[in-house]
Image 1 (tube, rainbow, N blue to C red):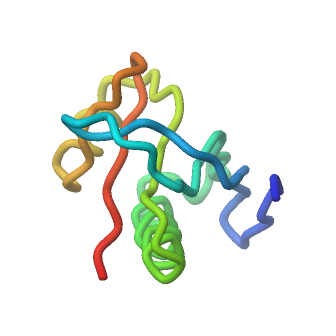
Image 2 (cartoon, rainbow, N blue to C red):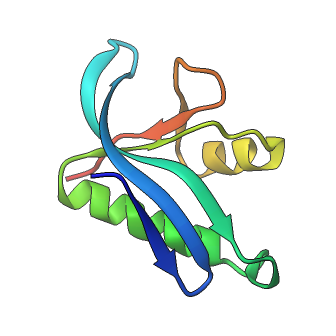
Length: 100
């Protein structure tokens, strides 16, 4: 299901999908984050990190990898790499396999 999640600090658009990930490019069930809107007065206060961690836990609960679409900001590209995400085969997208 595709949906906007409304949060106290903003909103995020997520959907279930399938992507070919990893070296073997195997088809993986994913929870995609397609759009994130954090309210300006909440930025830089850790809301995004908390949100990302919560969505990753949800994805893992359902044996889904987390896929982030179209990361245009270089600062966020570095952030995702530091958080253990891998670059996907599509430019500017990142993923993290689920943990059991």
